[in-house]
Image (cartoon, rainbow, N blue to C red; front, side, top):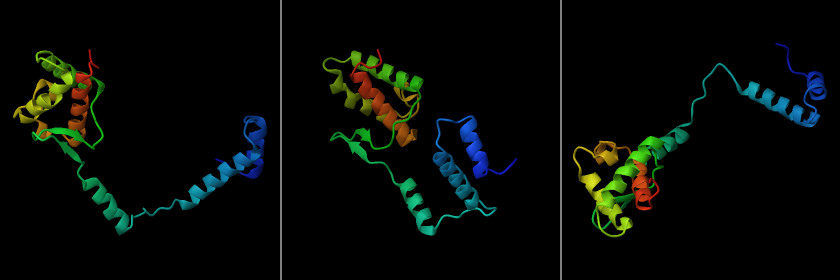
Length: 154
């Protein structure tokens, strides 16, 4: 492969990339050259302060919102579930809430309490006990249950 030169960039600019200015092509070439200059056969090793900061951030537990009744009602972790899993969790929560009198929003905490107390898991928790779900999956379940109260999965 031929090296990129100013002449070849000028030719490319005139021949096939007329919308790009020569200056932008030269800037791109400079970026490629800078990146090529940064590569080497040695692997970069993170500094100990960057490494410990990354480890501390990864080990930090999410903030947990617990109701006065001891039920986890929120997590600062990003919610994680597939579309199918979300629908299943939302659907089962919605069915459970439909059997209860009153506002479905008042049933969010009792439903979460039931799921969290189940030693074997429930349909709404993908048949996995609460304690075995990752914080991201727990957050996904809470989002699905809240959506059920809002009738978002009918």
